[in-house]
Length: 497
Image 1 (cartoon, rainbow, N blue to C red):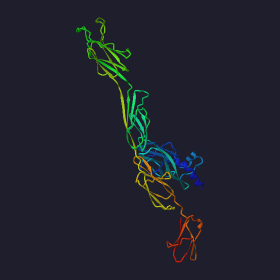
Image 2 (cartoon, rainbow, N blue to C red):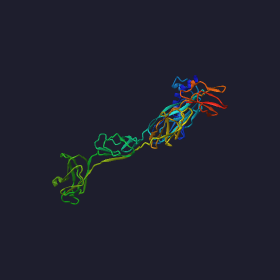
Image 3 (cartoon, one colour):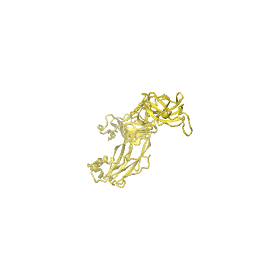
Image 4 (cartoon, rainbow, N blue to C red):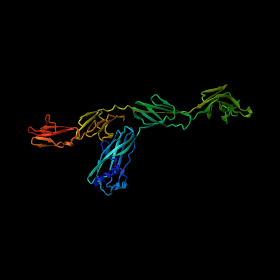
């Protein structure tokens, strides 16, 4: 009894130390990577990285098993130290996300010679969530084995996507899906940035952060995003004096040039001078370009074009005046003066698209039954209407390895099958409940000459029937607890619950 007690007590902590180790074909070739600093007799478990729905997952998880109960004693003093562990066998791993397979480097470890192992998890997870993976193992101490199952959480994040304009998660779902959006071009409170979201289902939003949107029916939805960045405003970049009758009089070659000396003055809508290009551009006939680079607000501005003259020629001449605003384009005139305004309005438009897929859940699998004998020792065969993509369950627990269309039932329970489509949508069959009845105690009878009678009727079930047989065949009318033998042969008594 002491030895059995030790096994039961040490298993929970021991199994925790190696619960990711498991075996199933599908992901061969994991690499063992144990830190060199770890002692030989220890418990080590590598981290299980998170995954993302729809993205291929390929991870190796290394572990080291203890050689004795000493490392276990350090974790739980109630476990006696100094006991040698004989062997560890990895039995199964269940409740993995749909699309993920696994395979261990080996399944049985003969201690203390074999302690290091690894498991590879691989595949493309079809669904997201936190999955409680059940690890079932057995350990042997003093020649006695004990098996148990322990949970390990594996996190699969929702599928997400990001582009220049926005990010969204998740990108796939079943039947109905609520998607979260993140704006990658935030305004920071600047009113010059506007937004337009088109969600692909006929609805729109002009909010900077619509946050979430729910798609209520299956389909492919193309999200179109547009951010208009209009934060610089209107800029008078430059003006060109195309023509003017201003000049400095008579030209004397080598002595005096009568070409105009242009400069401009600009006044804001209130009449305040905000720009003056002096010193002038001297002795240059039209066309003459003058760089300005000032920001324009709303309202009407005034620009004067001047020809700078010296005092001897009577002072500066006003060549003409024109009015303009933010949206003025093309050529303006005032008499002989012709100017061309170059007003720019830099606007950046960020456009992006992405896609959300909402898949329709498949029809629920139907289950057919062969057999109706619910006595202990009999078998019921259940068969799913789907040939692949299935997993059988009993009382909410996944039945490890039961992924074939048919399953043989020999124990009581509530059985059902879940089908997962290639898109990751799952649906469950109705529950089939079975209660297997314990067989009645085998009957015995006594013989007194040619008279036979049943023994110990008190141990029979409350509702029973008896049948005497001769050479394996029912004797008509011989259904009581006693029978008078009238001919030679092999007699038997059958009791039925």
